[in-house]
Image (cartoon, rainbow, N blue to C red; front, side, top):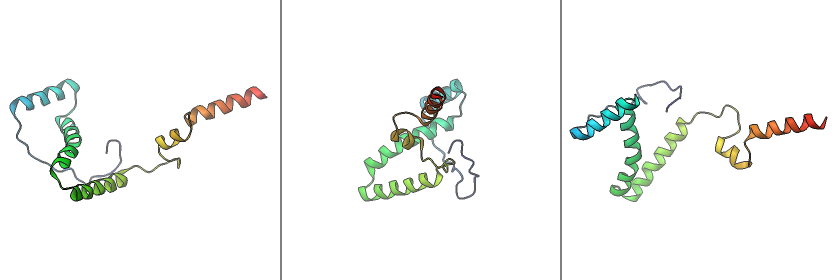
Length: 116
């Protein structure tokens, strides 16, 4: 939810989980955080997001995996920011035409002024 204006409530608060790490892994994580200026939790979130799906696929039965994915898709759709301009997502707009809309607008303005 980076960049969203969603306020934290009891329903959407981040949960705390305590994990014991091998000292070498903890050192690597601390070094990464120190060098990049980010918090260790940023990298832990990325690691968990990237690896959880693979672990679920390996250990969960297919029907349960389908249920989890359906719930995750619903949550992602609910968290999506509303389209303020009514034009759909950027990928939809770009896939519909070979050139970005701003470029098309600029070309039409320059073509109109040249023809006068």
